Image (tube, rainbow, N blue to C red; front, side):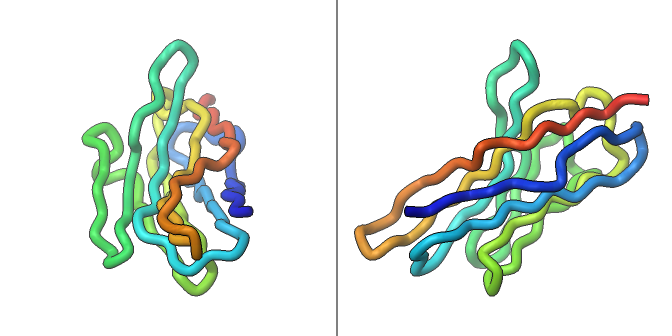
Length: 119
């Protein structure tokens, strides 16, 4: 049983920084791609940032230059540093990971953490 648990969400003022964390737990052989998605009210879930096992990253244009994704493989944890957040970044943020188990490669989602950017 693998679980992804996000933390670090909350209310933040525009321009303040916020860091999200996502810890993967369970019987895990390795984790390849990890990523952050978000879903705002009335909108589809969208990919925000992704980091592969080798460290290469991808960012949505809307967050490029403001958000930074990183990972600590020793802790099975992925982070999203949100700098200069804007009200339009308000959404539920979900962690996603491709996890290699003894039974093969499986994709998992976290339960989500709310981020609200407002003055």
